[in-house]
Image 1: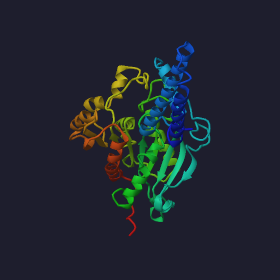
Image 2: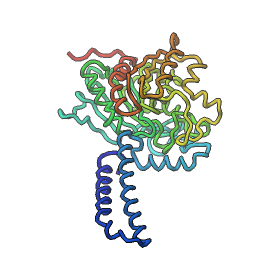
Image 3: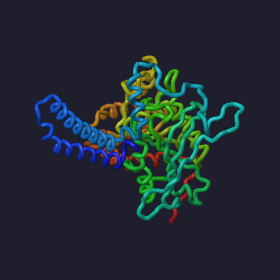
Image 4: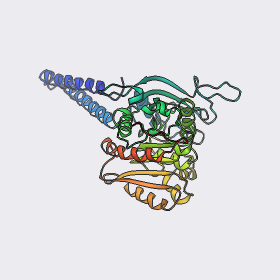
Length: 401
């Protein structure tokens, strides 16, 4: 059973009802003054309150999408216990490709860098046909250079299956959750594929391929890597900038040009979007940050990612735009005047990049927060900006009709 969805909530609701019913039924029997009666009353009350707290925690987790599986939750717990260790979990540089498809060192035959585990259409009342609604694929991506791997959801727009686009190389947007995030929430809660399809049909959005992931690769475990090349540890920044594009280009008809690759994400996913683009503009040149962090976080969820103050500065987004040459990228920063802590950083980033090769646009709302309600309001205009900014290396066919 996953940690999100109605089944877990329904089970905990039944347990809460049963626990408080037990309190009512047993209270008279436990009304004596002996120590056994006192312990009994404390036990039934404590048990009832415990399952109520678990229900509230599960509800919050389901709403915000913190942990989608037991592996995510227990992996975080293991990291919290070992937070003083210098190296997060995961393969070190040069560890080689994982077992199964992907990678292939010198002298080895080429193996697939992406495996498709299942294929489905969008859940629409009118049904789902690839050349009219697109197709969703659950895949595993393997890193040829880092040895990392991750689960992903790929959405191919309807144009991908239409004959007019048979020679078109589609731009790609990597879409990221926050940390740790629920991968399914990108499809079910934030509805990226449905929003893109709606935008394409209304001719507000251009067709692109979506690659939906979590910020930390699945093979790393429950560690918040902040998309960092960890000294002596997993090279997550390289995985994002090199391995993901290589695996996707190996499988799908997409453009290899940096102008056709972008990243969009919320919270930690927004951090990664900016960081990966600023540090790898020759691979990914477009970024959208929704409620991102402009520093280099280090806390119980990350452990020591940087190894030195100098390396931490290099991974600090605001330090980079203050002190390093501005790369030729286009970024969209979304925030709110009231309710979000990153509003001041958004304005400073915009000021520091004005008149430079880093083109900064902003999407500012009057009120918002670090939550799905805010991101759901920001995603439609952000997707319109993103698809209009991404460029393919091949000409876009005229729309039908």
